Length: 120
Image (cartoon, rainbow, N blue to C red; front, side, top):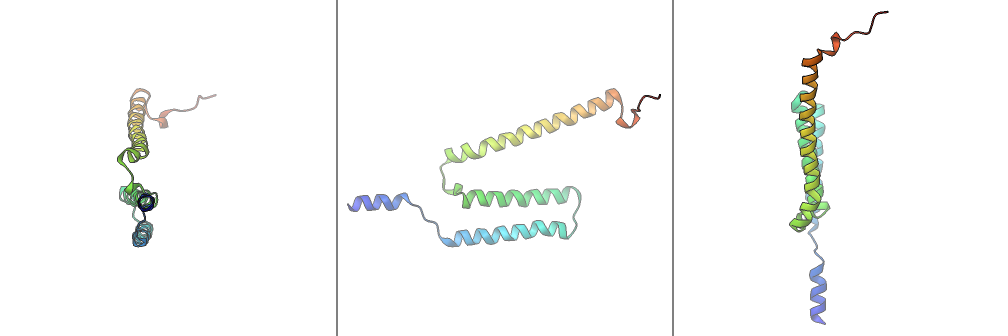
């Protein structure tokens, strides 16, 4: 009977409450940083890079701690995280190809501003 109790207790993994509170505080700080980007009126590539960086950090914390992925096996992590990463790579490839296609059309047909409607 003692063996059954030990096995039952080992099956449930409890994490200290401090981890969750620390992550909540860190999420609050990261959110404050992303609001500060707008407050200081940063513009251009720096603005979007910082916003995306803070967003990815917050998403990583939520996935790792609140969804318990930090304590999961590598196979489960790979099954959940690899498909979105592959999609991001494919989106990047499509964006690059779209830019190439757009530039090729500009070279072949000229800028869109030069295209005029037929005169009556």
